[in-house]
Length: 251
Image (tube, rainbow, N blue to C red):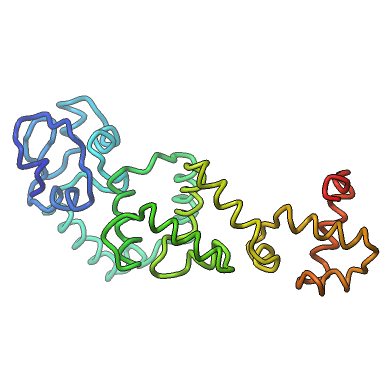
């Protein structure tokens, strides 16, 4: 049993921090009420009758995932047997009907609730496990990520490396660290143009090169060949700058 439950003295004020603690809590034959220490087959009636709170309020207070039913292992096992038996008899379908799935999706949209820290921690652990790691990504990992971009790869491409964090983590890091974001922009500005195009983020240098070559009278096939990109790319950027009246600032 997790430390949070071993430490008696109710009510317990500290919420669960990991899914391991949550799983330990639900492993007992009877479920312990963290508000009073009583043990019950199901907490739903007890919470409303004795403590005047809802099941969702209890989940929120103790970091229990929203989709976890507040029933003891014995009751969950019993309900599981009943459902399996009803499926065998054809009373209920083996899979949710399309109508039921549609209702669940609509309910999630209208009743969206913040992710519990226990669930967030579990997702993070699974992501690290996928990369063969136990420790969270740190500054050195992000710096290595940037070095690989500098070598001529996009954020998405580097984010697929098994020993690197995913692109979402890198994006979050540059959002949270303005100084590092400037460092990234400086690196990105100087990668090859075809890399910028693959990454769907062209820099100022690329725009200046297009305007310079076009001002010199080069044709679009000539410009695309010199910049090593598809003809449509510089042409589209040129026309966009022209429409916005920004050509002069890149001359």
